[in-house]
Amino acid sequence: MSVDEVREKITAMIASDRVVLFMKGTRFQPQCGFSATVVGILDGLVPSYTTVNVLADPLIREGIKEFSAWPTIPQLYVDGNFVGGCDIVREMEASGELHGVLGADQAPVKAPAVKVSERALATLREVAQETGESTIRVRISPRYHHDLAFEEEEPGDLAVDLEGIRLVFDRMSAVRAEGMSIDFVEQGPSSGFKIDNPNAPPSVKQISARQLRERLDAGAGELLLIDVRTPQEREIATIAGARPFDDETQALLETLDRKTPLIFHCHHGMRSQRAAEYFLSQGFVDVSNLQGGIDAWSVEVDPAVPRY
Image 1 (cartoon, helix red, strand yellow):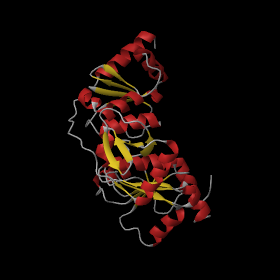
Image 2 (spheres, rainbow, N blue to C red; image 1 turned 180 degrees about the horizontal axis):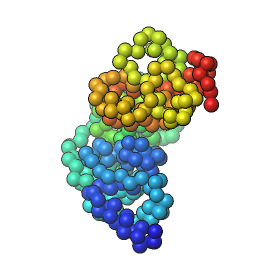
Image 3 (cartoon, rainbow, N blue to C red; image 1 turned 60 degrees about the vertical axis):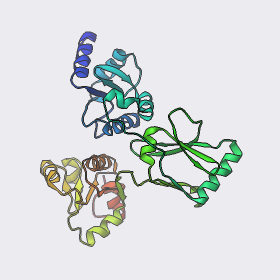
Image 4 (cartoon, rainbow, N blue to C red; image 1 turned 60 degrees about the horizontal axis):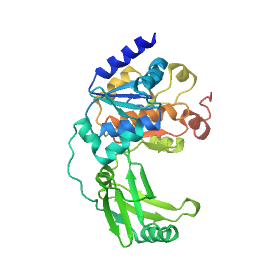
């Protein structure tokens, strides 16, 4: 394919929808953290958009960089115009500017109600005395990853004053922080801040091979154990009761109550984690991934299951 043909193809892709994201992976299975960040932001602002997986076509992957004169992926286009990469999209979302670009509603935002334990507050004061800083920025990503850092307050921030400590939030972090609590847990080398956020969506649970055995022995009820490996791998080894992730199982999943417990497994736990995250995004609320996959099952539970 010539350079001109690649540009024509990219132009057609950009014109195919009002919002187009060139990314690594797909909307439901991002293949890099930066792409996942932008997907999380867009998911919270617009009901639908088009994604282009640049990993599927090396010509598009390199061509879009030349097309936009931007060296990295992901890249967001709105109404045919290049908006930016991950950092720019994240900054625009935090300031509220992205809402206007996308035409999304922007409700008034107020400083969040946040609970900070006495131990956490004392720890923050100790650090503030050592550093000479007392303003702490709280960032909450669209996927509800939390970050605390001493940073200066910026225009448009919303602030919460706590007896000598000032917490500042960008607009979207403030929305996500409502009702959040911060504690400090002392557990030796793993001591640190513990954040509980009632707004965070359900996450994929990790279940060990022994825990899975206990659940199966106790009577799984409506639980579905789903094997996402290839048919060739299933011929080598299987866990009794696991359903193959075939067309029949996918059709069944579309009809199930979203409260049905789902447990996914693969060889070592990577492919099944991605599958579990996808079905969590589809509304299922009790989704687990078998840690270590069928290999852990062979080692910890049933050595009669062949390892490969």
